[in-house]
Length: 235
Image (tube, rainbow, N blue to C red):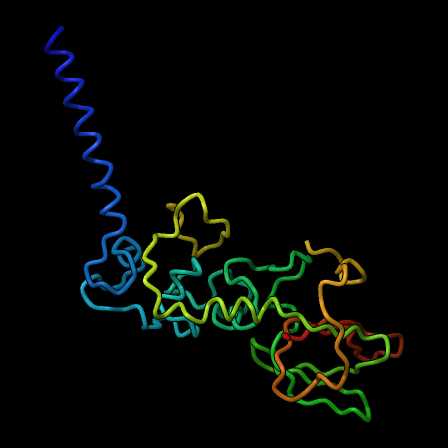
Protein backbone atom coordinates (compact mmCIF):
# COMPACT_ATOMS: atom_id res chain seq x y z
CA UNK A 1 0.00 0.00 0.00
CA UNK A 2 2.86 2.33 0.89
CA UNK A 3 4.56 1.62 -2.43
CA UNK A 4 1.35 2.42 -4.31
CA UNK A 5 1.05 5.79 -2.56
CA UNK A 6 4.68 6.60 -3.31
CA UNK A 7 4.12 5.71 -6.97
CA UNK A 8 1.08 7.99 -7.18
CA UNK A 9 3.00 10.87 -5.57
CA UNK A 10 5.89 10.36 -7.99
CA UNK A 11 3.59 10.34 -11.02
CA UNK A 12 1.87 13.49 -9.80
CA UNK A 13 5.23 15.24 -9.38
CA UNK A 14 6.29 14.25 -12.89
CA UNK A 15 3.01 15.57 -14.28
CA UNK A 16 3.60 18.93 -12.61
CA UNK A 17 7.05 19.11 -14.13
CA UNK A 18 5.72 18.22 -17.58
CA UNK A 19 3.24 21.12 -17.70
CA UNK A 20 5.77 23.97 -17.61
CA UNK A 21 8.07 21.97 -19.89
CA UNK A 22 5.30 21.71 -22.50
CA UNK A 23 4.51 25.41 -22.11
CA UNK A 24 8.17 26.31 -22.56
CA UNK A 25 8.38 24.17 -25.69
CA UNK A 26 5.30 25.92 -27.09
CA UNK A 27 6.82 29.35 -26.49
CA UNK A 28 10.38 28.46 -27.42
CA UNK A 29 11.95 30.94 -29.81
CA UNK A 30 15.58 30.05 -30.37
CA UNK A 31 16.33 32.86 -32.82
CA UNK A 32 14.45 35.48 -30.76
CA UNK A 33 12.51 36.85 -33.73
CA UNK A 34 9.10 36.79 -32.00
CA UNK A 35 7.98 33.67 -33.88
CA UNK A 36 7.67 30.45 -31.85
CA UNK A 37 9.80 27.57 -33.11
CA UNK A 38 6.70 25.37 -33.42
CA UNK A 39 5.09 27.82 -35.83
CA UNK A 40 8.27 28.31 -37.83
CA UNK A 41 8.79 24.56 -38.20
CA UNK A 42 5.18 24.06 -39.26
CA UNK A 43 5.68 26.57 -42.07
CA UNK A 44 9.18 25.50 -43.04
CA UNK A 45 10.88 28.63 -41.70
CA UNK A 46 14.28 28.76 -40.02
CA UNK A 47 14.41 28.50 -36.24
CA UNK A 48 18.06 29.60 -36.22
CA UNK A 49 17.90 32.77 -38.35
CA UNK A 50 15.52 35.68 -37.78
CA UNK A 51 12.71 35.52 -40.31
CA UNK A 52 10.06 37.82 -38.82
CA UNK A 53 10.53 40.50 -41.48
CA UNK A 54 10.74 38.17 -44.45
CA UNK A 55 7.84 37.63 -46.84
CA UNK A 56 8.31 34.27 -48.59
CA UNK A 57 4.89 34.28 -50.32
CA UNK A 58 5.25 37.91 -51.50
CA UNK A 59 1.74 38.88 -50.38
CA UNK A 60 2.70 42.11 -48.62
CA UNK A 61 2.62 40.64 -45.11
CA UNK A 62 5.88 39.68 -43.46
CA UNK A 63 6.06 36.54 -41.35
CA UNK A 64 5.44 38.38 -38.08
CA UNK A 65 2.20 39.85 -39.42
CA UNK A 66 1.23 36.47 -40.91
CA UNK A 67 1.70 34.92 -37.47
CA UNK A 68 -0.47 37.55 -35.80
CA UNK A 69 -3.16 37.31 -38.52
CA UNK A 70 -3.27 33.50 -38.38
CA UNK A 71 -2.44 33.38 -42.09
CA UNK A 72 -0.15 31.04 -43.99
CA UNK A 73 3.27 32.61 -44.71
CA UNK A 74 3.69 30.17 -47.59
CA UNK A 75 0.33 30.97 -49.23
CA UNK A 76 -0.29 34.46 -50.63
CA UNK A 77 -4.07 33.91 -50.51
CA UNK A 78 -4.80 31.99 -47.33
CA UNK A 79 -8.60 31.90 -47.70
CA UNK A 80 -8.51 31.34 -51.50
CA UNK A 81 -10.90 34.19 -52.28
CA UNK A 82 -8.83 35.71 -55.09
CA UNK A 83 -7.23 38.48 -53.01
CA UNK A 84 -3.72 38.36 -51.56
CA UNK A 85 -3.56 38.45 -47.76
CA UNK A 86 -1.78 41.81 -47.76
CA UNK A 87 -4.44 43.37 -49.99
CA UNK A 88 -7.18 42.08 -47.69
CA UNK A 89 -5.51 43.55 -44.60
CA UNK A 90 -5.08 46.86 -46.42
CA UNK A 91 -8.76 46.86 -47.40
CA UNK A 92 -9.87 45.89 -43.91
CA UNK A 93 -11.02 42.40 -44.88
CA UNK A 94 -10.20 39.23 -42.96
CA UNK A 95 -7.53 37.25 -44.87
CA UNK A 96 -8.76 34.07 -43.15
CA UNK A 97 -12.40 34.55 -44.20
CA UNK A 98 -13.33 34.41 -47.88
CA UNK A 99 -16.55 36.37 -47.19
CA UNK A 100 -15.64 38.93 -44.53
CA UNK A 101 -18.98 40.69 -44.47
CA UNK A 102 -21.06 37.49 -44.80
CA UNK A 103 -23.06 38.82 -47.72
CA UNK A 104 -22.78 35.65 -49.79
CA UNK A 105 -20.17 37.12 -52.14
CA UNK A 106 -16.51 36.17 -51.75
CA UNK A 107 -14.20 39.07 -50.98
CA UNK A 108 -12.34 38.53 -54.24
CA UNK A 109 -15.57 38.85 -56.23
CA UNK A 110 -16.51 42.13 -54.59
CA UNK A 111 -15.14 45.31 -56.08
CA UNK A 112 -12.35 46.52 -53.83
CA UNK A 113 -9.33 48.60 -54.71
CA UNK A 114 -8.68 52.30 -55.24
CA UNK A 115 -10.33 55.07 -57.22
CA UNK A 116 -8.50 55.38 -60.52
CA UNK A 117 -10.63 58.20 -61.88
CA UNK A 118 -14.01 59.87 -61.50
CA UNK A 119 -15.61 62.15 -64.06
CA UNK A 120 -18.06 64.38 -62.22
CA UNK A 121 -19.58 65.54 -65.50
CA UNK A 122 -20.59 62.06 -66.69
CA UNK A 123 -20.63 60.29 -63.33
CA UNK A 124 -18.31 57.56 -64.62
CA UNK A 125 -16.16 56.01 -61.89
CA UNK A 126 -13.27 53.68 -62.60
CA UNK A 127 -11.88 51.50 -59.81
CA UNK A 128 -8.43 49.89 -59.99
CA UNK A 129 -9.24 46.50 -58.49
CA UNK A 130 -7.05 44.99 -55.78
CA UNK A 131 -6.97 41.69 -57.65
CA UNK A 132 -5.92 43.33 -60.91
CA UNK A 133 -7.77 45.07 -63.74
CA UNK A 134 -10.36 47.83 -63.53
CA UNK A 135 -14.13 48.23 -63.28
CA UNK A 136 -16.04 51.22 -64.59
CA UNK A 137 -19.62 52.22 -64.00
CA UNK A 138 -21.86 55.21 -63.49
CA UNK A 139 -22.52 56.85 -60.15
CA UNK A 140 -26.12 58.10 -59.99
CA UNK A 141 -28.26 59.96 -57.49
CA UNK A 142 -29.39 56.56 -56.21
CA UNK A 143 -25.83 55.38 -55.48
CA UNK A 144 -25.12 55.01 -51.78
CA UNK A 145 -21.67 56.38 -50.94
CA UNK A 146 -20.44 55.60 -47.44
CA UNK A 147 -17.25 56.15 -45.50
CA UNK A 148 -16.27 53.27 -43.25
CA UNK A 149 -13.46 53.74 -40.72
CA UNK A 150 -13.42 50.08 -39.62
CA UNK A 151 -10.85 49.06 -42.23
CA UNK A 152 -8.50 51.90 -41.38
CA UNK A 153 -8.77 51.15 -37.68
CA UNK A 154 -7.92 47.53 -38.41
CA UNK A 155 -4.90 48.55 -40.48
CA UNK A 156 -3.78 50.97 -37.75
CA UNK A 157 -3.96 48.22 -35.14
CA UNK A 158 -1.91 46.01 -37.43
CA UNK A 159 0.69 48.67 -38.18
CA UNK A 160 2.92 48.00 -35.19
CA UNK A 161 3.14 44.26 -35.62
CA UNK A 162 6.71 44.22 -36.89
CA UNK A 163 8.20 45.47 -33.64
CA UNK A 164 5.89 43.69 -31.25
CA UNK A 165 7.24 41.12 -28.86
CA UNK A 166 4.11 39.00 -28.87
CA UNK A 167 5.27 35.40 -29.37
CA UNK A 168 2.08 33.53 -28.68
CA UNK A 169 1.25 30.51 -30.82
CA UNK A 170 -2.22 31.87 -31.62
CA UNK A 171 -3.68 28.50 -30.83
CA UNK A 172 -5.58 29.04 -27.60
CA UNK A 173 -9.28 29.31 -26.90
CA UNK A 174 -9.15 33.10 -27.42
CA UNK A 175 -8.61 32.66 -31.15
CA UNK A 176 -11.81 33.00 -33.13
CA UNK A 177 -11.05 33.30 -36.84
CA UNK A 178 -10.63 30.29 -39.05
CA UNK A 179 -9.21 29.46 -42.44
CA UNK A 180 -6.60 27.37 -44.26
CA UNK A 181 -3.77 29.37 -42.68
CA UNK A 182 -5.15 29.03 -39.18
CA UNK A 183 -2.63 27.64 -36.69
CA UNK A 184 -5.09 25.01 -35.53
CA UNK A 185 -3.42 24.01 -32.30
CA UNK A 186 -4.67 26.05 -30.68
CA UNK A 187 -24.02 39.97 -40.16
CA UNK A 188 -24.01 42.12 -41.85
CA UNK A 189 -27.39 41.99 -43.62
CA UNK A 190 -28.36 42.90 -47.14
CA UNK A 191 -26.86 46.11 -48.48
CA UNK A 192 -30.27 47.62 -49.04
CA UNK A 193 -30.91 49.01 -45.60
CA UNK A 194 -29.56 47.01 -42.71
CA UNK A 195 -26.43 49.06 -42.00
CA UNK A 196 -28.25 50.92 -39.22
CA UNK A 197 -26.21 54.09 -39.73
CA UNK A 198 -22.94 52.35 -38.92
CA UNK A 199 -21.19 54.22 -41.75
CA UNK A 200 -20.91 57.94 -42.34
CA UNK A 201 -22.41 59.28 -45.55
CA UNK A 202 -19.99 60.58 -48.16
CA UNK A 203 -20.53 62.31 -51.50
CA UNK A 204 -19.06 62.17 -55.00
CA UNK A 205 -16.56 64.79 -53.81
CA UNK A 206 -14.93 61.96 -51.83
CA UNK A 207 -14.27 59.90 -54.97
CA UNK A 208 -10.77 61.25 -55.33
CA UNK A 209 -7.95 59.51 -57.16
CA UNK A 210 -6.20 56.95 -54.96
CA UNK A 211 -9.02 56.79 -52.39
CA UNK A 212 -9.37 53.25 -51.04
CA UNK A 213 -12.60 51.52 -52.02
CA UNK A 214 -13.40 48.97 -49.35
CA UNK A 215 -16.37 47.57 -51.24
CA UNK A 216 -18.55 48.46 -54.22
CA UNK A 217 -21.68 46.90 -55.66
CA UNK A 218 -22.76 47.22 -59.29
CA UNK A 219 -25.95 46.38 -61.17
CA UNK A 220 -26.90 46.47 -64.83
CA UNK A 221 -29.94 48.65 -65.49
CA UNK A 222 -32.67 48.10 -68.06
CA UNK A 223 -30.62 49.85 -70.75
CA UNK A 224 -27.64 47.59 -70.15
CA UNK A 225 -25.56 50.28 -68.44
CA UNK A 226 -23.37 49.37 -65.47
CA UNK A 227 -24.40 51.40 -62.44
CA UNK A 228 -22.89 51.54 -58.98
CA UNK A 229 -25.51 50.69 -56.36
CA UNK A 230 -23.21 51.15 -53.36
CA UNK A 231 -19.67 52.42 -52.79
CA UNK A 232 -17.98 52.05 -49.42
CA UNK A 233 -14.82 54.09 -48.95
CA UNK A 234 -12.24 53.89 -46.18
CA UNK A 235 -12.45 56.88 -43.86
